[in-house]
Length: 520
Figure: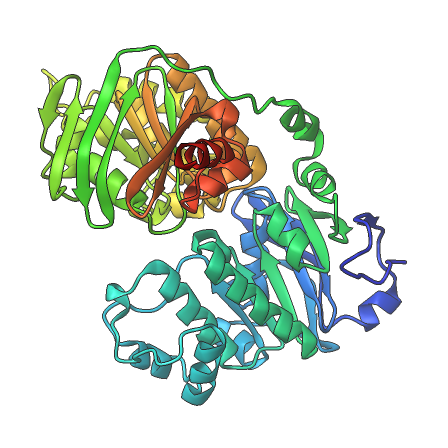
């Protein structure tokens, strides 16, 4: 029998729950299965969510989380299994049916139509405007102009608008699918506060996140999926991360845990890129060098100029002043194609921007090869196939569904974006939060590849929004605050405490002591 969850009980796997546990559940999914042709997305997924509970849904990319969420919300129909909501067996044939029953999901990618005003979007979904405004106040957005166009709004703002729209229908079960992946810490706190308020009102929240610290801080219990099956139910509290990782990864968990997160030594290769007094938007006079054979980390809180830096280097935007020197020659990029020709390629956090999601893995990976006209025609099929297969194998991309990239898990989609440049070739890799919304196993795999690329002579500039991960791959770290470069340190010294201090514009203890002595 499962132990009644409290925020303070030690984490432990909960054995199969009894029928009494079912009778206390608001939402019960039993034996859900889903096939896409020969591909098994869900084998046998079970989920029991109690009233007044925040329940995490965990699993590696490809474990079946997204399929389960889509079945629960009516976007997909299960091939087998049952769903019970409030003691009544339900089959949702559309998201509107699930919504009317009080079950709605907020996804990582905002769903507001960009060319309609926010108010018009609300009318499309028959959202109660008064409720929407009330939840905007609770999310710290009082006075927001409903005539705003979504295309002109920042992504975090869109995420909060999506959340307020879902809350406005007063759902019995709210699903949050990686909504915090693209939110800064202060906005994540607002989401947590609303989730706790729903719990206090006796409603339930299903929370999906790859950030184990968030799950431990917020959730009462966690259901873990692996290979399309439920493999355990866990009660989050102190020290539970390892248990969740072992359930998520199964036989490979020990291998992941054994991988040392040792920072690389300082690089001594030639200078690949030099940035001189670069200014663009928030970015304010940043200067640094990146060497071949080096992974240079960029640490910064939200909106400190890191996005402008990567966009300038990738040719997405032009700097207002300053220089970008590549291979010893000043360069001016008017278009991303200019940067690509200079050997600088971008891996963005937003996979949707990077991929042709309706196309196959092969077409996406081979895309850079299309522009390289050969002597005997535009494409050498044998060469293309060889290079694509090599890149796919190197990244261990799951290609069971190769017809369209959109059918792959988020982690495999991100791997496709990286494989494209392994096949196409590059000198400098610009990785902007490449592991956002990706499970721990895939993160380690991507960071391992980044280190390997640097060891083989490439230069890598890496920004990650998760500061503890800086040491997984980097040789050296620069820190941005207020658009300026405020600190630089070897990765061996870049623990979370040191990075947080620098990212908040605070001097290190040694610097503070030296300054106080100078003042004396």
